[in-house]
Length: 391
Image (cartoon, rainbow, N blue to C red; front, side):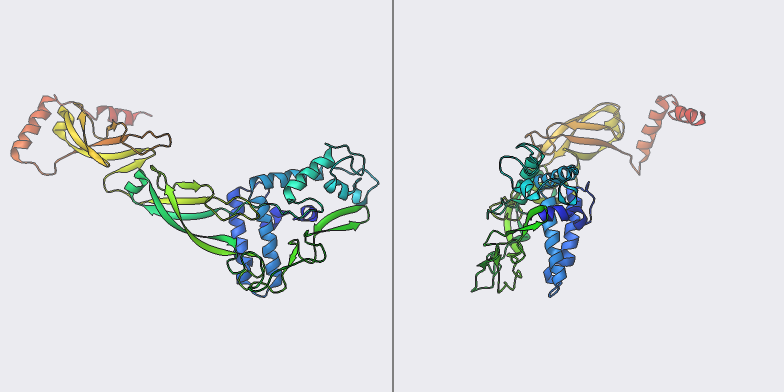
């Protein structure tokens, strides 16, 4: 990546996203374009290969929060430097001074700490190399996504699961050199391995990727048949991922540093695991609480009772039903829910389900008729009918 790339390329436009795009929107667009223009799907198509490289370059900048911020700020500062006269293209300074100055003043007398130095600092961080240097900027590995399905109990207890991941890494055939087995790249004679060359255009002077090696600093005469000289390829590996206790269905777990390997000493990306949980026959889930519907007889609900309710992974607990408990009332058993991040647990929410017998004998019928008579003919639906008539 060079100053010229910064000045001429709009990476948001390359990926077809607005400047306000979220990281997920950027990733989604990149994946779509990468599949379309990947060299494996367009063998022999040089235009598709160049397009793929440009897409990857844009994603490298916009997918990293720090790089994207530097990129946006650098563009904003550069555009904010208005015409001052005396320069080419309406700019009153030498771009070679602007981006390469390490002390003193710029070509227009801008002192250290001024706009020129600020932009130079931004570009130094964004493009990862100083003029005349050969050190490439470390790149963070890309994030990787995976999915797993757990049982209800495994989700509550937590589990370590093996995950088979496919991500981009150094090509296993050429070990990242980009050269065919038995051959090695040679140092580019044009840039002498720096990957950069200077170009003057009247009052402008700026560095750009070497036209001979395309910024790599090396030339591959006989490219690897697996990665086509890029030095990167898809690799498959298996890792052991710890899924924390209390994870819920549809939750996305981030495992830091478990993604694709970084480049040039950069950190690994992260692994995002989408968790699916199979439902339980008895228990349900509401946030950190477990839910349970317990059948209760009419006499128990009317007169009150003590009943036993099941506990997940534990012995049944006794719950008291107060006299006159209506159908649908929720009782709480504390500390019998799902695990939270702070080590505490949610509760078990028990919903009372009053059972009405579908068949009754004569003795039961007589008893119910006595109960009805003892209630004195209370009109339990009187208020309902009255309110329905109101406007």
